[in-house]
Amino acid sequence: LFAGETEFLKGVVEMDGMPPGDLLEVCFAGRSNVGKSSLINAVTGRKALARASNTPGRTQEINFFTAADSHYLVDLPGYGYANAPVAIVAKWQRLLKAYLSGRANLRRAFVLVDARHGVKVVDEEIMSLLDRSAVTFQCVLTKIDKPSKADLDKVIEQVRGALAKHPAAFPEIVLTSSEKGHGISELRSIIATLI
Ligand code: GTP
Ligand code: MG
Image 1 (cartoon, protein in one colour):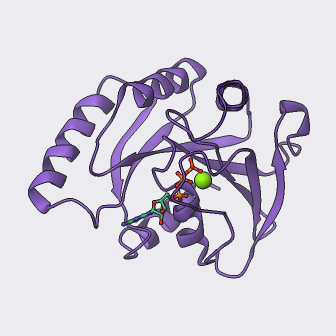
Image 2 (cartoon, rainbow, N blue to C red; image 1 turned 135 degrees about the vertical axis):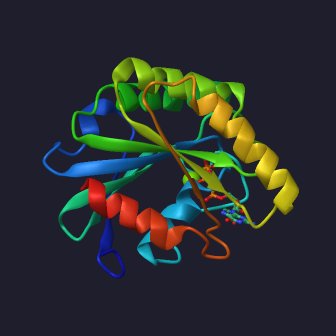
């Protein structure tokens, strides 16, 4: 479905600049550095389509990718700590919130959570925003290559507990590692059923 067919369309810094909602889309949200851009690269089979980096706050625009001319994949700026000036970060956060609460063709938001850290307060805030906006979201654990099996199991329990409080949450959690390729084909299949 994805390989070789995904192209960068545009980076957007204001709601006015959004592409028309003519195609369905899914987006990747999550704290800075959680692995959003890396996951888009893994899912599309393209190494450097979305720019990933070790610096939190790498993605500073809402980046739209057109996949197979049939839908958009959307890479969002991170929330939480970012290595950028406060005023700039505040501007991205406003844009992020406007996007997540006002995009009619958004079929599902993937909320990425680091498998080492679990759901944090800032994740809860985004989940509550998605509840209020009636946007179905699904939690994707990233970097599952990092924790031990025992620690991963604890985090999964914590995430389950957190999701139970959110009516817009899709209950199934996807376990992924962009680095090792875990869960990538599963995520592709999920996206394929949505768009
Ligand atoms: P921002 O755009 O800054 O919000 O970050 P992001 O969420 O897009 O994260 P990005 O994809 O840039 O990845 C952040 C760092 O995590 C990079 O150094 C990646 O190489 C690393 N990373 C991403 N996914 C994985 C993974 O599955 N396993 C491991 N070990 N590292 C990963
Ligand atoms: Mg990024």
